[in-house]
Length: 244
Image 1 (cartoon, helix red, strand yellow):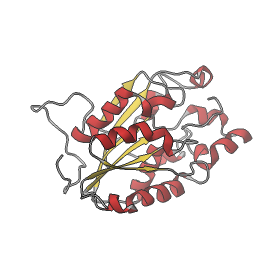
Image 2 (image 1 turned 90 degrees about the vertical axis):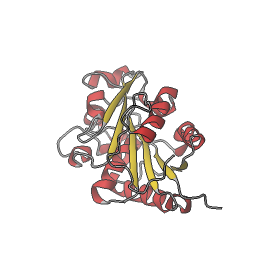
Image 3 (image 1 turned 45 degrees about the vertical axis):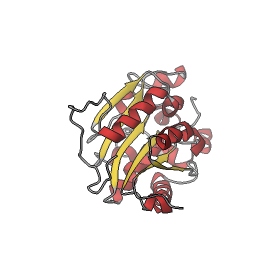
Image 4 (image 1 turned 120 degrees about the vertical axis):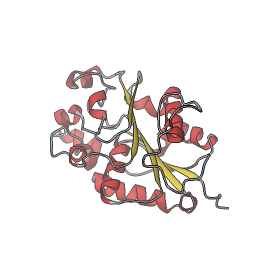
């Protein structure tokens, strides 16, 4: 039986991952009362634009998600770029808040270094090669976001080879600086490495807080909860490896 209209969350995993990588996040969101659609998409098979249309259209068309009065997104890595690509070209009135974990919003120097290698292209597919830091890379062509966004970036690396290529603090794949994007509401930096951001308890608590209040910091009844971008009809309540 379809559930009553409420708030839903679409989860999008990162490059070379599956929906299983978001299972801990999924359980926490379900426990918090959201309807959750944890999308599995073939991240190495197509371009960012093609992946975003296929994955997000499928998530939005799920029967229970269609009943939701407000739809949020929580993403890991490449999943965040899919959301940016989709909402650069489409709009929905039910769009709520978005939280991106470890997104290469301004590309990654790791891609700059290795995308010319045959093995990198084989492992990461067309979308992986689009994630460079150059001005004409896909993330840098998408411009500022036009939705309510919180970014969670990691500053712990377990891949020293990758980190030698990255400027500033990084999570082994993406720097804190390049995780940020124009138009975002807030940045949260956690001492977690890239592959584990979406499984970290503190990061999950930050996601829940941002979806509910529009901010990562602790919310109190006297605080100001952000409403920018919220649905108007929302109901109350390693070196060559993938993983971008």
